Length: 415
Ligand SMILES: NC(=O)CC[C@H](N)C(=O)O
Image 1 (cartoon, protein in one colour):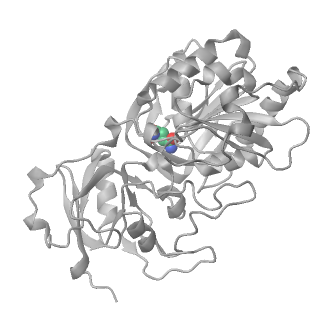
Image 2: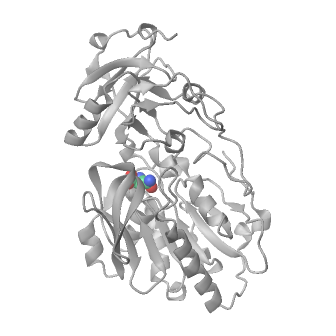
Image 3: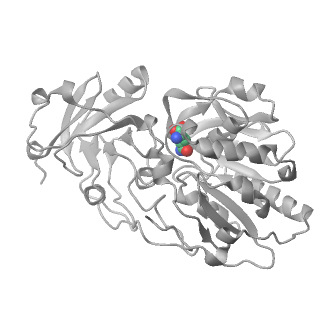
């Protein structure tokens, strides 16, 4: 069985405490650093770890036992040629921290152990540390930088020169440019009849389930890079979608500028737009609102949120460290109104335009993992799309040459 001593690993929080545990992931000579964040979700570690929004982050799981159902295939496809189980085809986070790693796993979808996935993806993983203490610390101090040392030659936290460690801060980098597709591609809904619903998905690091939610409702989806000049082609689509993505939204200057042009274009006044998480933040920035970094963010699958239109509480899936300032949203002159509010901390959870078919949410209606309470938002988006198509009498909108589906790849090409 496992020998803790020979696999010692150390987790150190910048200017804070240090913990000794065991490594069950990739061991490297150099330390691994990133922003330390915690999630209180009980299940869904494969989905969280493959979510591009976690790029550059070290995830602390408050669920004490992680790994017990293994990891499903990261390449198996569904009927829409989309990944069947994962939120992207890579393990995206920088490292993981758990209380107790389950060395035995069992599930009908499992293809490998969590350890195997981490090792082959060169991702560090440390177990045997007091995650309750770490989370209490993060809640008091706020999200902070940290590092994991898995070099087998370092046998004790006493023989580390902490002063010499450098810490990578993902907040300083435009990580969207790293995780988003570099080239456009096209996903076809296989059962389409005469009038296809053509959605333009702006990929800032989209979770696969967002694409599944669009395609399974009958859309043909053209996926473009986050900085694609969408304002030049928006009129050719029946709806625009802005995805989730990692890091500080203010790094996506081109997306914000392009969205601003779309919002100001009198010819696009009826065009349906839906944004999720980073997509919500970018739409709000485009409308002149402000965003700020939260103390430790919201990462969970059970966050109560009030729908201000239906006055109903919905339970939401979340993963974000930045937030739109409610004050700036309320004061915006663009017609955006508050749509959802977080019932735990009163932060903004969404906006809706007062008379245009535009809305966005800070939480994740695609919920992978998490509850399906807010999947009605995808249905509302499709109602907006159908109304928009009916207004234009289902006229077939021409594609520009470089986004003609016939010349685009049918799945993402990694460069
Ligand atoms: N899941 C997301 O899209 C996250 C958005 C943004 N990176 C944040 O942390 O707030």
